[in-house]
Image (tube, rainbow, N blue to C red; front, top):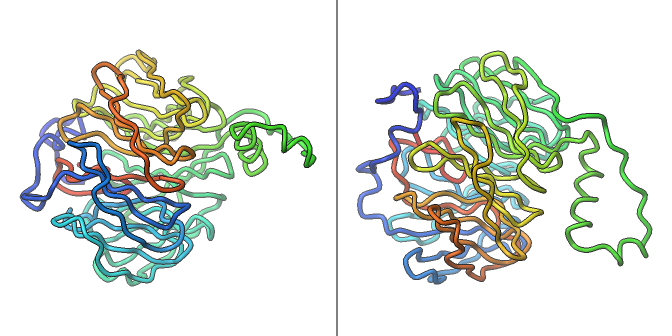
Length: 366
């Protein structure tokens, strides 16, 4: 991992822009998984200013390691569609197997395609996306990643196994697994009449339990500013696990809200925003105290994935089951806007972002 100016804050380089993004317009890129489209929002007017078709089930919009391209991850089309962030326009499409998510090694040598449905991390050439090495992981539903402070290791969440895996990035080998959650839960047998009476939220929770009966459903992963802790949002446990980065053991649990899902550090790296998708809230966690210090409510909202504005003043989140995007004031927690978009908005990307290079996902910059 390239050195940072503050050894106690791995995010200390994300306060100024790289020359690589000079002149890029401020935009919010929203992949609509259910519509197979991308909506482009002007964050200053809160208006959708462009809309285009991509592949089937686009999951995330990911900045390239060199910050010069954005990639739409078309999971069920087995492809990536490029967006030129200088213009905001759609570019070429490249064939890549099962790109549910995508990250980059800190040195930029490899793109890591998270092939969820086939349980693999695929190390590919970051320019051509030619496969270099494929690593099978011993779990189901691998989906989100973050790296150790020195870049030697990564931790990935396994949604349907209720576990984490630790990977040696240099040697590209699995070196540890960690089960989360309590006693396994037994899925409820559901009749057609029961299903008709259930609310959409209850149906989603029943679906989660059926596919992850371990009492745990880990989602997003974020490293603490000092690099000592991995924070892991758990959608079924309704909170955030703290994992010792070196020992790879659990340090404790922070209750947040139903459906804890996305994790985003504040621009000053003092707070961690956690979207609680099933509850329609955002929990604000203090890195210093490991406690929830504020809770923001989005009425009838389903906040999922997103990012923080370059100035740190706005948290942008997709409304996964609400066909909308939320803009939230990070000082007051006030909902500034809810913007209609396509069906199933998921891993939206706020771009450009300050930082030297991208580690992937919806914009993990360092």
